[in-house]
Length: 428
Ligand SMILES: [Zn+2]
Image (cartoon, rainbow, N blue to C red; front, side, top):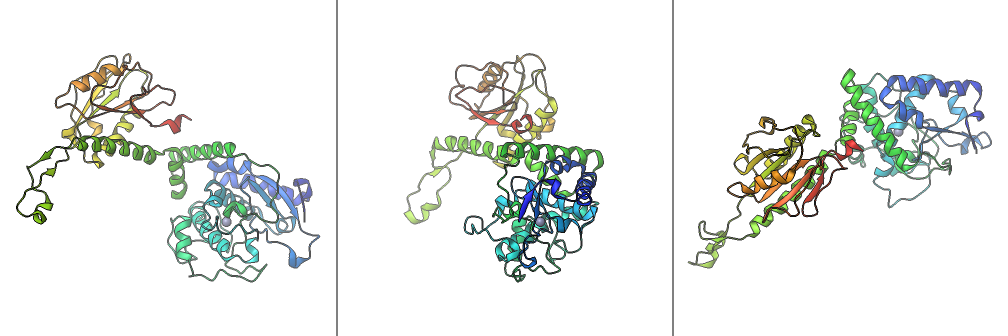
């Protein structure tokens, strides 16, 4: 087996490679930068006995973004089929199928799928099903035999892990060594399951940091394309949203921080006799005090100074409002104070979108905190939404926890507050 660069290909195959990349970039323009990042490595197997040759018909990739081209395979392909496989393989890489292989830890074997490892073949099929329903949804022509959820008798739109579970034992994936049946799609390489292949090169490829940047770039392109044309496949839209808007993550952090605040409030135990405890029944006639868990009173301070973007602020406010509601903090327990260099009167609203954003001048969140601390009843928790370009007081208002939702990673947060990065991912 010999490996080398594109000049190991004949002129026809070299033209095919170039044309297929252009064709693919035309089909899925939002993935053009990813397609251009593939580094081709030619694998010539002519010195091997035909029985020993490995199946590179799917143009397999590795996790360093090398794509392996077998001149013999290329001589049989046309532009759309080659283009399809390039889009398909880039999809494996963008979706990190190599890191998601369920048997990753336990297997560690180096055998290519075409030599019949059932776990690898099952995962390859599952990952292909995750990718290909999106390719079918687009304008791309799918070669005969490329796995689709439909061909497996399963629904579209699942994750590879869901297809993996559904395929467990249901399909006979054990094939004779070196043989591929009509239903099979070939081996997508270590880029699909993270397990080495005999053809994998030790040349350094695309570094991890560059891969991360590339993923963000593709995700941005998907968003833009969706806005302009509205026809990006649903799976890719989800992928881009999860990558660019890790809202769930900061919302979870915020929820945990608020819950801790609630626990603190609940911790100010108030053994009250108002409501009999359920344990009363087993304690005879003695009425045990029940633990009252007061709902926390929350105030929000919104930075409405000139440096803040109203759209972003409204969006973050809506999301923070959602988190608080999910924790049981309703309108009665929530006061919202707009603050630039001065603090405005507190507003109690049903929905975040009903808040009237007042302000637009200089910035001093200290004034807003002071105003919130004066509210009666006194809040247990203050959530500040700000870009952090503000002076802060030396200490938190007495007896009140402060959580700062920071909308600009370059902004500052005082040590006495709990900082949660909001929208930091987009600024990166
Ligand atoms: Zn594949």
